[in-house]
Image (cartoon, rainbow, N blue to C red; front, side):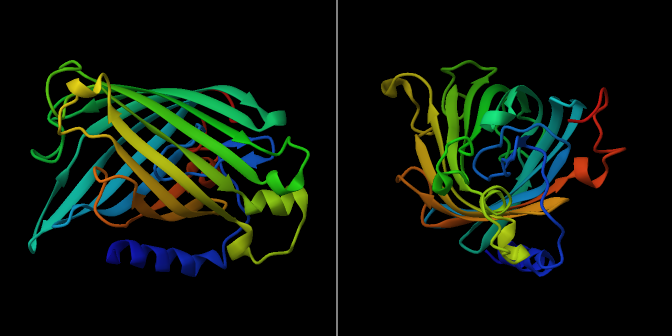
Length: 302
């Protein structure tokens, strides 16, 4: 908890001096913010440095996880990414840590309808299970295919609902060993949904309340993340239960970076033990370095 608290305090000290909000996942007047349990539907030059979560898998163990990812646009609607995670487990006063899987991915934005604030993308990711620390990586390789969408409510002619937006993700993960090779290396479904209320949208598209910047760039949200083994219940190994987690918090989006934090609530006994916390510091290279590092390798930016 201390790591996330210190990060939040440090970032909040910078908020009052930060410039106006920009971001890469834009559909018309809508910005789909970076969320924590699922990915947004956008494609851009960006980095998560990192996503930090503190949870309790059981009553005796505290898990601190740091997830890192860097994404680079090849074309304006196609990006490649690479990332990994670092875990620290603490139980009975003893701590041990290590690296998890290394992954690479490709994400393609296939649909963008600005007038209806709609965006959708698909991705494929390859996980390398023996690239991390023994006991912390999965120990097997897998391939995940994903679909994402975002839909803003700005085209609905009723102002109270127009600042809202929905985003979603659906994943299907297939290990090299096949779907029935035992706990930890089985085919799984995962994904989630978010409901966002964009104060920047309210201020710019509906009514300018002249809010202070600490509020004007804030997007409160709730999100649901889930994971389940594929196939019939009778064939699912006990080591891969169905889990549901609910996140509630907010994202503050600046011109070059965003910061988000959520309380994490397990919704069933197989998820976690007690309330956790998750946070993220996210950099937008397409705004930081638009002519160099943030520029697509081929073609022009959107």
